[in-house]
Image (cartoon, rainbow, N blue to C red; front, side):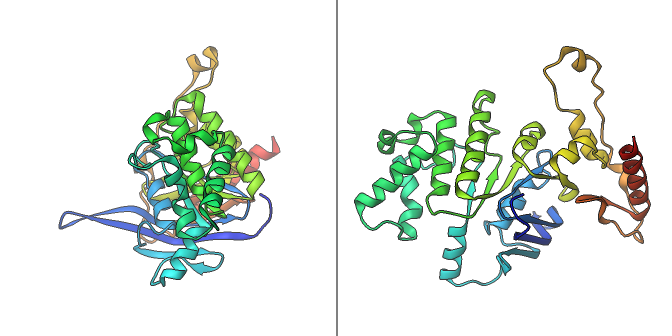
Length: 317
């Protein structure tokens, strides 16, 4: 973490969807967390847990059902003027999961990257516009000649680099990376993550990195939040989360990570998570509690005491 300045505050965020006439899906159900300037917060969990919906709600692709999203102290949601929305869109950008579906196949790469430049009037002339596009292509590891090609002429990894260049075109401060490597070959994933880390250092960027691959999230993230069924189960510094996971769901996710060690794999015990273990009495206050410094767990008062005792006993050893 570069500095203790809150860039984004998410307070009791809820995102509900109506399915049919009677069913309500609680995709995001009361999330609260902060993201500090210059850091990367990883958000992990199984498919359908609400990770991507959280990212889309933060960036206003969905209007929040309830709760607040504050960016630099200002509420993101609610009624805004066109000028306010435009200013916000320049500060916050998104890298999408599917590098094939997120690029318009009818547009050349130069047009795709320059969209934001045109909307925000960031180029003084056509020459300046093209120079900015070419510079962005080189920044993400592509060539100037790629500007006149169409998306179908590129590999998945190259397309994702184009998506990153598009996000960078308006000089944002905060980027939501929504599973940016899940559709890529393993050999390409590390290249894209290394590029994101390099760009963060060069441009002082802040990331919300959404993924389901815990090993890759640990590599890029300063802190990690673990989601299950629309709720945040655990939030901690990445090293602490891997060294001392507390919530049973976090332990289950970590137990599923394979290692390139045949002996370990033969003896690896997969921990299954049973949500029925956590049916709370209506009178119980269940919330995120700080069990250890900066290490929060969604639990009851009774569970909190148990987690704290276990953590302290580990620390003594």
